[in-house]
Length: 228
Image 1 (tube, one colour):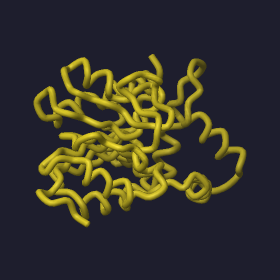
Image 2 (tube, rainbow, N blue to C red):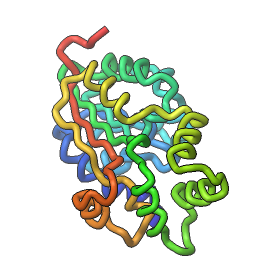
Image 3 (tube, one colour):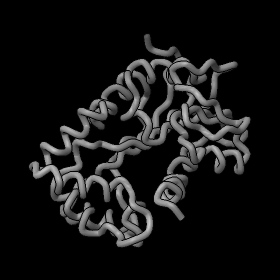
């Protein structure tokens, strides 16, 4: 099983818990080449589609950016899994998301706050990188940081700037400005890439203040009238 599949499996329980009853209409923003949560949602009876420029070439997916996707009708739910910190304009995407939802429709977001990825959290993660097997994004960051010779914060902020990443706290502020927040919490994020480290192992380190929780779980509803 890949790290991405472990991540999807671990986060499916959170997404599933906040979906309305099937067969609600669901759109996933940034489903990625693996299809995101769409296969699981369709298996459970949801009318789910995914939108992503690199989405699978299958009928239930649309290979385009969400900002350019033309909906035939509003949807009951939008799911965004670690996609918002990559988009060009968060406000534009969230504005379109609000327009795409039915009044009272649900928004489920799983995100990452890169600004919470401090040196202690980085070292904890790098110390638990598995030997052999899949060479993931944390392996790459470990190698690039060591090669750079920079302090961790300088390396991280330089990388985030080059990638055009949005801070997690800025994403949360933009979400709260447009939607009625039902849940906002931080959560473990790195464990899928640290197998056999579990989500419980990472949560224990967070509870002990050894590391910071960098994942974001957010659930909200669209107001009766979409904000301008």
